[in-house]
Length: 209
Image (cartoon, rainbow, N blue to C red; front, side, top):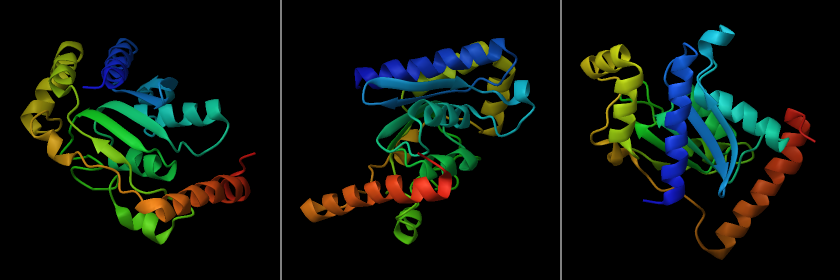
């Protein structure tokens, strides 16, 4: 286990605990570039009265503001529960390179139910928008995440267990490496495409400076 992965995943657990204290659902997400934390957010649906304020979306918006651009290429997103399909699409469009989650979500997950995270057709059809599919590390510290959920939101934990909403067994089968361009020319092509995305598509279509 990479010590940085452990540290940032446990940061997600702390954010989930803090969310419960604010009467929010127990979800937390962190976005990191290298060893630097860019953003860290808990669920904010109830406070905002906005169903889109999932922890992952909150962290994405905060990271974009921090970096001053829409693209989060090269970043890793950590979250205590597998991102839903809605969050997964945002992860893909912001070009996050790596996703690490603890508990799998077989009924709602963006990789275990609807494979948005690893859909290679997105990047193939629209490479000027979507980077190659991110690396997915599933089931990371899943038992610990399950214990945190049980302690902080016991009723939700019991319901999720009964209905199979969040699981910690066999989640590793959803872990997949990123599909990258092969060889020297492939790497150069991807580097040029990243430059195109940042300087042209982001600037003129999304208002980035």
